[in-house]
Length: 422
RNA sequence: GGAGAGAUGGCAGAGUGGUCGAAUGCGGUGGUCUUGAAAACCAUUGUACAGCAAUGUACCGGGGGUUCGAAUCCCUCUCUCUCCGCCA
Image (cartoon, rainbow, N blue to C red; front, side):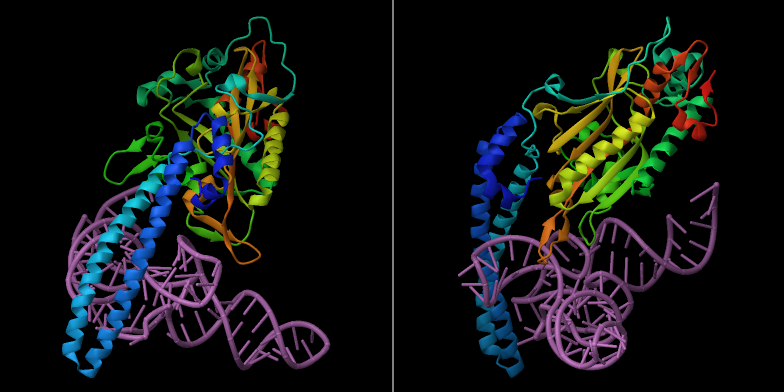
C-alpha cells in the first residue's frame, strides 16, 4: 500500500512508473488526493467541534462543583447540539477514510526505475547465466518417471489421501527432501539469518499485511469456520507479520524459516503441472529482511548473491532474470527470479524469487523505525526463496541421472547420508 | 469443554465518572559532578492525523453504547492467567 503523503509528493512520477506495470493510475490518484483534501477539511471541522465540546464539559464540571446547576444545564444543552454535529461529521470522516483505504489497496507498488516495461515473462531480462547444462545419458527420463522408478515420490498415495498436487515423499526421496531443507537453513544461518519455525496458518490481518488479502484471497486455502484463518502460501506471510505494528530498534532484521506452502493454483494444467513442477503443497525455505530504506537495494543484491551461491554449490545450471513490469507482483518494486535448468524436461524452472517491496508492505504492516532525528519512518521489507524445494529436487534428479542411479550433489552428502540413489 | 480473574505508556504498576495522555518505580536519552567510569542529582522520554508553528484532536486490548464529561459504568469480541476435566 502506497503512502498518501508520498503519493501527493510524487504523483506524476508514480503515474509514469505504474504504467510500466500496465497500471493506469491517473484518475485514481486524482480521486485519492481530492478525497484526502476533503478528509482533512472534515477532520479540521470535527477537531474544532470536539475542542469546543471538551471545553464545555470542563466548564460544566466547574459549575457543578460550585453548585450552579442552572448554568450547567444551559451549557449541557449547548453541548448536546455540538455533540450531534460532531457525530455527523465523524461519520463522514470515517466514510472518507474507508474510501481512501479502498482506493489505496487497489494500487500496486510503484516499480523501481530500472524495471523494464513489458507484459509477460517473455519481456523479462536475463541478468546472468551460470553453470553447465549437462549431457544426459541416452534415454534420460523426466523426473516424474525417475521418481516412480526409484520410489522417491508417490503421487497416487497423495491423491488418495488428499488430492492431486499433494505428493508423498518416500524413502530416499523423503531423506533428500529433508536434507535439502537442512542444507538451506544451515546456509542461511551462516549468512546471519535467525531461524524461525512459524505456524502454517495465519489470520486475516497477517494476510493483509503482506498483501495477499483482500485482493488475492482466491489463491489461498481458507479454513472453514468463523475464525478467518488461512493456510500460508509462503513463510513470508507469518515471518514478515512478526513485525506488524512495531517500531523496531535495530536494523536490519534477518529471518529464515522453513515451512510448507499451500496454494490453490487454480487453472493450471498439462506439462506445467506434471510431476513436481507445480503443486498445491510444497516445501520452501524463505529468507526475509526488514531494513533501512537507504540500504534496501544493496541488501537485495546481497540476497541475490546468497541465493546464487546455493545454486552454485548444488551444481545446478541457472539463470537470473529481472522481471519486467507486467510480470512483477502487485507488492514488489523489483524482483529477480532464479530459474534452474531441468535437463530432461529441457525447461527452465523458477525456484526462487527475490524481491524488494520497499515500504509497500511496511505501510500495510505499520512497520517502522526511528531515524537519527527521532522521526518514525516506514522500513523496507525484502524476501526471497532460499530455496523452493520441489523444482530443485526435480532438476537434481534429472540432471544427475546416470545409468542405474542418480548422483547426489556433494554438498548434500553429509545431509543425506548417501551419495547415490539406486 | 466447565468455573473464575484479568488486559493501562519500553517494562513493572497506581488510578472506579470531572482538568488523566495518565501517579510512582525501573529502563532509555541529555546534562551536572568526575582524570574516566559508577553513584547521586537535574531535565527529558508514546503513537497517529491536521498545522509553518503555537497548538488542536484521537488513542489506557478491539468494536459499540450510556453521559455535558469515560482508563473508570454497560454490551460485545479477542487474548492472557488460575482451577477442574480431556489430551499429543
